[in-house]
Length: 297
Image (cartoon, rainbow, N blue to C red; front, top):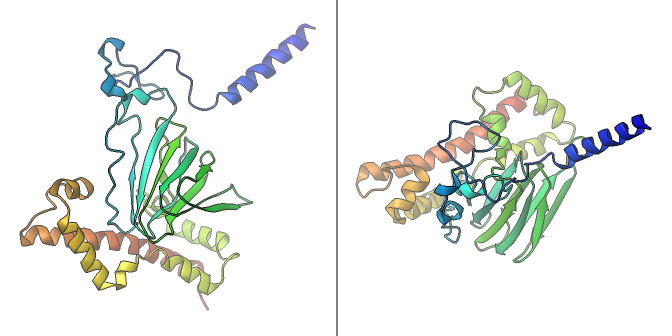
């Protein structure tokens, strides 16, 4: 009998651990993050309650449209516990995304969160992919008022497929969900991942599913349309020049905006560097593809 009771207690303990495998529930009314505390915990130490004010729970600006004049055509405003200290231990955060027409949030994952997304304006294609080996795609085109859920930590994406700007807002099940962009992680790691390893991964993972021409099209999708469209690049340059000083500085770093020729050249360099960054992804893919052999005739 004693052994049976012990077994039941053990099973209940295991079940309790599994159920509470996410972020722990708060043990007091509030635990505002103390960023200056020397204590290292999973999250942040609690600020002295006597020092807590309403401002610790406040974030302003989620109503302000973001600047989508970039190669992705999107802007992500993601206030987490670092911007709202009162989120500490609450296991939630939010994100607003603005999309230009055809703008994208490329495939990425949140290592510590699931996500529920609502379309406020526009028409947005969303989707996520399940784990290997199924790799099943679940995708929908959402309109204003539609809601879609991305399961915990799975790779997902969004794209504005309408002709007008789009806006979404989402809520995530973590005070600090993190974000791992797939392309940037694979091709932009520091130090870089060994080319031979990536070449083998591409050969073994991609070549069984795509023909030579499809592989080339897949790689070329990483190249922004602006690369071969000088007029659109000129339009982007002109639109950047019209932005207020503070907004451009916020997006691209200090001392970018200006009326003189020197600062005008800085804006051009921003555009060129952004395009070259995306171009480098394609060149890396093409290099690895040729090395692995699945683009050879």
